[in-house]
Amino acid sequence: QVTELRDGELETYEVAPGDFGYDVVDGSALAGGDAAENARILTDVLKGIAGAPRDVVVMNAAAAIVAGGLADRLQDGAARAEAAIESGKALAALENLKRVSNS
Image (cartoon, rainbow, N blue to C red; front, top):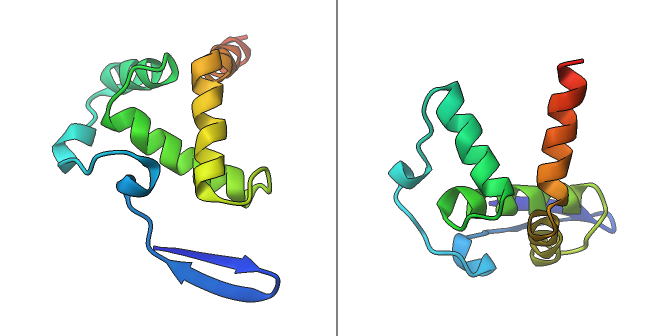
């Protein structure tokens, strides 16, 4: 469920994976693991490997992009997130963060 404040009015609506063209999956498809496994999953997502983890990252990034004012609709935010992944910019940002964090 999403609640947005637009032009002084609150609008509440439901969001589902199908709204983004994604399949609904069992929660086990999103299970992580230890730190190394989670890092591998994140790297795979940012490399553009398709699957439920990538879908969830795109949907959450879409919400952040809309909240940040960079898109008006969740689907537009998802398109921006997908473009960042597909272009390699998302992975480059992670690599830059790792480099800065380790210096």
